[in-house]
Length: 348
Length: 252
Image (cartoon, rainbow over all chains, first blue to last red; front, side, top):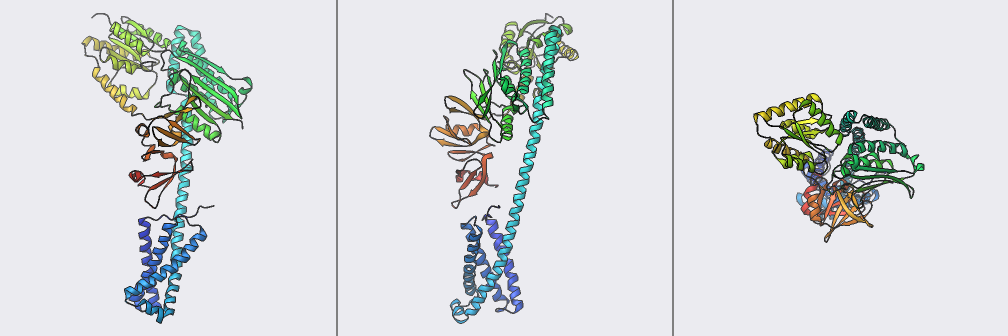
């Protein structure tokens, strides 16, 4: 159902309505004079202008007080405003033309009734014209709004997709890891080979996962493990980590690349800045009507002006879209230091 | 000319070893007087040994390579080492600062070493000025920082609410109420302070005691008295715009 039409009354609309009405009034005066009605063009012009403009002013005044009239309400408004406007207009017209209004009422009541009748007849036509004009412009505005909404949504989906692709093959991560592999091949070839295997595993699973809509929690955890293993070589004793996922939760369907950004965030914003490094705990557990994933680090924590970048904001947006607002992402201070991110996923 | 000393700073051990090995091939006479695994150690080493050259990784815990460079201002030549950083590399190029990309290639290192040797022999003054310009450039690009998260008390812990999730802020004495879709919480910060810290593009003050998230505004209409009335997307109450702030909605 369409919402009731809204009549916004600003100066521009007020003036254009009056100006258009004046044009119609002139046409009506010419038309009536051509038919031989009334007292010549001059008199007809005065009466049609004053009656028409008064009616228009009354209707506009009505809209000023009742912004969103319902359909019966609107009909009632017109039913009162049009005759009242016509009557007041006839009085004003008589004053301007130099007639005595009381004489007209007493001597030629039929003429007065005729004037009212003609005023209301044309008034209805003109009101109908304004009404359709307003309706058309509002429908157009609505269509435009919808189109803008649709395009924005499309743009956002594309952006997310692109950013997701970039996030997986983050150049800094890739080059740094490759430099490490290269160095290790000289100093500790076995370690170098192991790291290259981890990198291959990480790239393969994250890249093939993009096209799938769902994977399992277990597969995502394997990805996280490969990622953390790479960092373990790079950061040495500065990083320790644990992944605790009960076997039965490993089979849970889970969207790809939702937990990895949280782990990445813990490494980059939490531990990398800290000279002494720290620990990362990734944990899954049952919770109310679903399950809960926790990524906690003992790093430097989140500052009020931390730009978490793409990671957290994107996870939040995707959770919202994937679970229709039923999933939650909670950020807390970890004890004694660092950040704890909890994701609550409902069963579907 | 007496011996040339250098320090290497990188938080990742394999990468320090790698650079050291490459340097010994390309510039055997160079004395590596120390390796640092974070910014602070690098600073100590440089102060203790007074080397002519410092190879500084940019991303290091504690102090970054940039921070270290800023602190030793001009006391030795600096070669930045980075894996990938569009941002910094662009600045290095513009200011003609020496830099190496990881993994460090032999050809590139040879070029850098040649340049360093020439500079040392000609006794050219150290690039203090260039570094200064580089720092200014990088700090400018970083831009001003706005508040991203609000710390609120929740149960017995502290939660961080992203400011994007806030629908509006309302002043309550010395506190400010943070209104989100899920409810209301208090922060111990006057609204005046918040107004200065929030991104003015995203948050508008519409009343002495109210700051609204522009994204949460559903529509604005004008009441009979000329005041603006804001309808919100995810909350039922409406907010009043005082005439002082009506100019924000002028174009609407």
